[in-house]
Length: 396
Image (cartoon, rainbow, N blue to C red; front, side, top):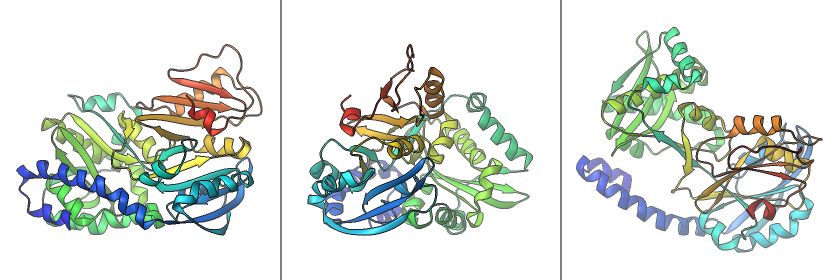
């Protein structure tokens, strides 16, 4: 309802009224979430992992709480419902059940995480933001990244061209035939579609980049320009076809939007949110553009993670899913090297260079077999051996 009213707000007032609307939502939304989730579903997941097997206790609704633990298993795990627990007793319930599981994961809202759970849980925000300062010359972005240069070259070899549109009919076509089917095909049951009115308001403050071949529209990108910032809002391909993303489509669209923003004096690029997992595909793509990660102030959900004893299943989880833990305003990356021997300097360097992204305050790497002598850790990196409990990782 509120978003619909912004359709009639003059552009000059939009920048004044929108922060007020955002602040009101941020103050009221957590209480609404808390009231809606008073009973929490408990599920046991058991199955094979790349290094053995695992038994995981999951607290929260399907599919939102299931996405992260499902990525641990090498095939679809067996799922059995345990029951429900009141939100205000969920922490004590999980603590009693914890010894029977390799891992415990609970997806709860921000207010519940702060009110009902101790600080001995890793707190993984549902989303983090990504962005960077824009250079004076957009071509410098390509010179700094061989991958981006290759993407743009592939787009040109495929005869792809970009153009800018400010027509409302074009936006309606993009939303209906590209954004909705692409988002549903990519995220399936976990898809969250942006409200059409909300996205239309973003379009009004920026525009739409079309990508075409021989006059046929294949993909599009909605962006907005607010203050000195270019913010990418929505991406989609014709009928949701994911194969186009391998032809340099996304990079060509982003590069056109960036070039347009620089020409109009914008100084910052906001590429939006992604999962707080360092090998998340969206984050890996955005790293091409030299982004930094930062806390997402509007984030309303956390996945809380704990284990009773470090074992191969826990090591596999953090090796395959290097998560970001939020501690106040700091982000700590936590991963593992699941080897059966002492880790070497080469292991440290390989892990760091594969996963590190600017904006992470501390990088923690665990190896239960310990570390070779005379290892020089990369900047802001902590090496931990043995079998740490959550409290030992968090007491840094």
